[in-house]
Amino acid sequence: MSLEFLGRLHKELSITGSALYEIVLSISERVNRKTQIIRLHWHASGILQQIDEVTAEVGRQVADHISRPSLNHQHDAALDTTVSQAVTRVQTLKQSLTQIDGQIRELKLEAIHEDSLKLQQDLTVRSAKIERLTITRHAAAVGQTLSAMPRSSSVHIASVLRGPFLLAPSEGLTFRTDDIVVLIGVESEMDRLITWFTSKRTLNAATTKSA
Image (cartoon, rainbow, N blue to C red):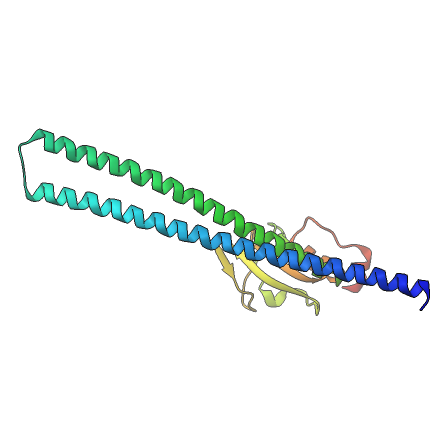
């Protein structure tokens, strides 16, 4: 075997080893992230149980006090103190719950960001992309249905966001100003459709000829 062949083989093995290492590292990070999320959910569940126990105990004491009315002001003051302490305890537990919720959201956002980067890489390799557009007031799409959209064999609407709603693409869907449209497809075909949804971009010469 020649030295050139051995060198090429060594290089390919090094690249394969690096890729394998990155895959293993990525999997371990995902497993670690999921483990953290599960632990945080268990912690949150424990806090909710503590809140239930505190409120149940206060409720029991208040019910007992009402069922046995007393003129003892010290007893009334003790009950007030107990209720006040319970309120403080519940507020503290709720703050902890809010912090845990924030940590869970951060971990989930990390996972979403990682998946988004991988999706972008997959699309770029295939000369494709994903585009998020806001329909402008004077765009051609306003008042039109999805069936009126310029046809393309390689670009598709992934979703339409309208206020708090996620709308599934359908032939009868009518576009409105400020709708958010998510397109996915081949980059060379994307520009022609972008101009239909927004007036901010103009058709270039090549796109006009293809249209």
